[in-house]
Image (cartoon, rainbow, N blue to C red):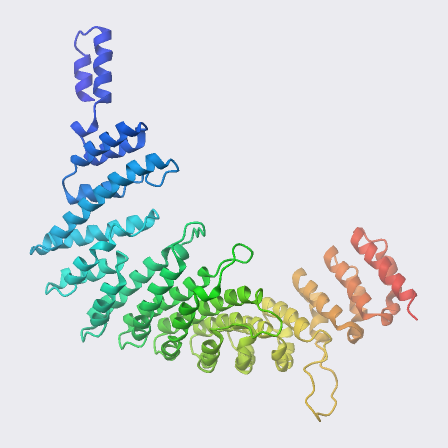
Length: 559
């Protein structure tokens, strides 16, 4: 541009000046600039197939260094996936030729004896693999280099060795070649080498799971399920072995890989009503994950909190995968058939040590444990006693989670009803509100847990006092929750009638409506506050007026 300005300062006629500017502006960038940029512009602008092919080949001929080849092969402007088959074929052929040059040049550098270029090539190969993964490209570019990179894992130079391990994990290598190398490395006496192996294994698994576990999950563009499962199953035993390694970082890396495996299993189960899939396609992965639970169980007793949290993450993701599995098989299981539940045995076996972590000194561990047990649902029945004891935990989040978990366990948690009733007076509003909702599910009549055989009769344990207290002292949402619980008790809530009559004048229309409905649920005994209900017929809210009228009509016609 500076040349253009200097020339235009000369006494040229306007036509010549315009022509000169046009020539300079449209000259091929390859003549004076970056050949990769020249290729990018060609791929972006050339639509004529013959011209595009010849110009692309000319651009490729200008690429000479490994850096140029790498930048060119990952350009987003390639149209090898274009809907136009002819255009896609042109770009695919040229891109394949470029990829082969990139691989050949990389192999030449990696087979040399100079650590400097080897390190640079490994780093470049690692970046290339990650770039290809980011744009959704398959691993055909980097996977053929597995053997070349694996060979360098045994190099004497520690820097080259570490870079080779890291790169091996990122290029989505051929598992048959890479796994023996990492297995050998995982048995090394040097903890640093075992950490390298665990880290590389994690990278390999990430590459295997990438398409399925990405945040922008696209079910329409996914690799073959069976191939993904086969690769994952081969890698998991090494991750399980790493979970019990003496080194803390190896355990952390390995548990992270196992958690990703469970996430992969959950993602590979298709959403309901989207496609018909046989769960047996991913059964080997479910069984392989379950086989690692013994190692995960040991980590629940680890002296390091972060390791325990990661072990709990593995179980949480596994429980989620089981939920998705059951959603699938329930729709296809015929009456009388046994429900296929391959993860149930392993998850149930983990319950005793899992329940022990509810007494861990770190509240984050206790909270994470309850998160897992809540997802277990009824499968966590054996942990109900330990969860009931957690209702007395000093941490309000633990108490809140314990209540939710008992609700998820369901009817088998009814023995916890007395302990739950005490929490209706908990100082934390969220705990009280959640407790009221769970009690309404477990004990709708307020009669307490079922009697055992030959147990003498005892007065019903009705948490009315705490619920009635909420009607005058708590925020709107808690008042609504309390009213729903009172309504669920029916005639057993008779002592609440006076306070319900007062609540008919609550400033919130939703609360007034719920109070009317609670009086209706109590039944004939509510006739003692009929006058208050008649006043509600004049309420400014139409729903309240309608509900009050219906309740009065019902009460007046009761036998």
